[in-house]
Length: 507
Image (cartoon, rainbow, N blue to C red; front, side, top):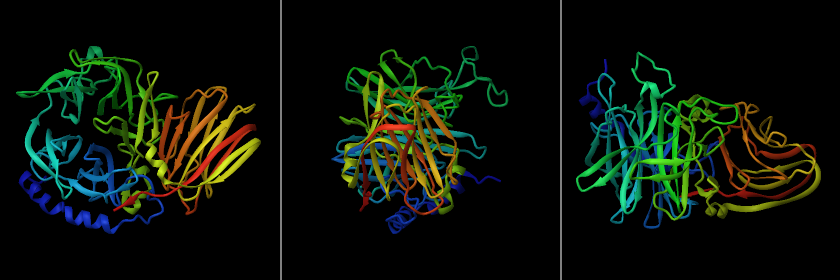
């Protein structure tokens, strides 16, 4: 029999202890397991996911993310917190926000951060279920305290609007003409006549579609304006993690659709993370836009968030994927997932380019310069953590390969010039997720890639950031990988540098 609500609330008092969690986190750092990463933010134990509350307050970048410090499943949703001034030196991860009362007893879900009166504030989704497992959602503000905890406030924005399910979460602020708004992820009970999605009569008489709602701050409180109108009325059963960004005279709406059918050259992940570029009118809530584009073509990238109100658009994503815990080999050792390196976004010709923030270059140490011509194959030792910046001038070569090779395993990557297709193949790895990814990429005479190889995280940036691909790897044997570059005929020229990288410092 399910516990009564009062009993479950009493359990929370003993279940979560900030001091116990923080003491354990400090005791387990620096990381010692060979799969823990050197230059990616992660937790020493438990499961992390969505980045939350990204904001710069008094010169410090604050990064929160979803965290279950009590286990390796998607339960006990809390927030982990760390901060940095330079994206190299970080505070030790700590428990900052966790379930405490009737409103968030079943999870402190995703939300945003912002600065008000010199203080860092957050706005997040509370999740609560009754004895019949019926979900009730609410939104709550809080303020970061000196001890790293978030002081919750009583203001609640209860309830999902009529016509939308209780999958109603992830508020994210944006400003227009000095007025504050927030975008909210939602699930619409759609008009069957407008949707191609099949109806499950046991669940609903309506097909369920993803949507983004907009609320406006007024003298009388928050007012629901309605749903952002796009050309993607029927694009997955849920849209999560909205970010509405401004790039000079253009707007970018970042969304994470779930339930989009896979295609041969796109939409290959279990859940997507992508964006629309165009012009957004806050008056009529219409987004005039181009095609949906993916932010990352790898296996493990989801729920990104962009630092609020920065001159630079700095994005952090989750290197993971909902519902695929069984693909994470580190679960055996009590921890799962990592965050991406901070990536800076630039908009060019209607497309977002992504590259790691320039601050990451401070990790560079010794390097090997490469400049070789008319070669069939080269092999480069990548060491304990590396950055490669390589340009391959094809010459007569039609298929060029660059593999990350471990002892008896490899991640195979290749570019097919004839079909302009990039391949990433993890089937050569014995542990963790496998599979392949392929996508269109234009490279006429040469292919440029910048690749970061950490202990269990790889981030690849192609053609100066035109495309990115993040994914997790779990080498079976201890040792350092190699980068092997070769082709179907001798390559005209390979040039660039490979740096050994230092590691983040936690204090």
